Length: 339
Ligand code: NAD
Ligand code: UDP
Image (cartoon, rainbow, N blue to C red; front, side):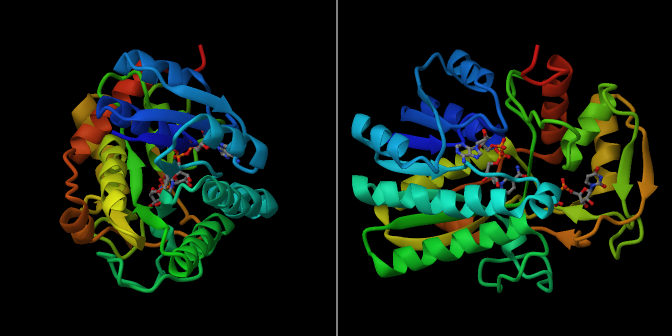
């Protein structure tokens, strides 16, 4: 069993990963500045697992805090979720994105090097792939120049980490390229809790269903897809969390830097998501078609064969499970983690 530093562990994917880590017997230290989360998520992690975790409120850009954490804990590996993730916002305040996502990753790697900790699992994204690639996307395909600053920060962070591992064989780094994380813990106690108007499809759908928003705008129904709406690879957040444990095990045995797609390999259209949500949960979702969103591609889904073969990971949950679990979380917590 290992001791894992989880940056951004109070967030959506981080908190679900903490549950899986603790349930597998690992020890967890979370570093999070709570800029996009609340400590309540960690209270629920502890309640669900009946396990203890250490929480440090602080920033990955703060070298002193990082040094203190590594001095106080015998950390074996780091899972690095901390960062900003809103595509639209990244166009308005690029420096905040460069700082948190690029400088933050460098800051963390510097502190790890000082502490002699060289195993790292990094949250990357399918957005790093060149838009000209045709799905299913595999890790051998070229990366491109993402059309927004958020995607750009993920690409640069990936490249920095690749160069770091190439220069120094002590490093062992996993780049996990997530497709579209959705769903929530089966208990309904934990889930995605976006602040303000959701950017992503799933929290928008659940907020319309619960009556917090009037209508979903479906961005484009004239794409070259079976029903004209965008196709994405939705992956249950618990399957995604478990991919981190598999990547961690792989990194304990190997050096270098390697990328893995984390998706189901199955594409679903926006209309399919909405209709399946209505069927599975027996609740209507009001929607209207609106123009395409700038920067969106028609279709993106994963070839996940490398993760299945090399990590021994297998997604377990169907789209129906994802939509049932997202709704279970939303209806039990209409205002997310806020009272
Ligand atoms: P999230 O916002 O819920 O979690 C990120 C956490 O990091 C938050 O708790 C936030 O408070 C914390 N944080 C941000 N900047 C920090 C800093 N400088 N220092 C310390 N803590 C900081 O997001 P998420 O959906 O859980 O995403 C986790 C990671 O996965 C992010 O790096 C994100 O870019 C990446 N990712 C997410 C998606 C997605 O659709 N959710 C897709 C691909 C990649
Ligand atoms: N989408 C939509 N309405 C919304 C949000 C998203 O129609 O309010 C569509 C979007 O155009 C894309 C899919 O849903 O086809 C997934 O979008 P999301 O922002 O969740 O993830 P992305 O794949 O863009 O990272």
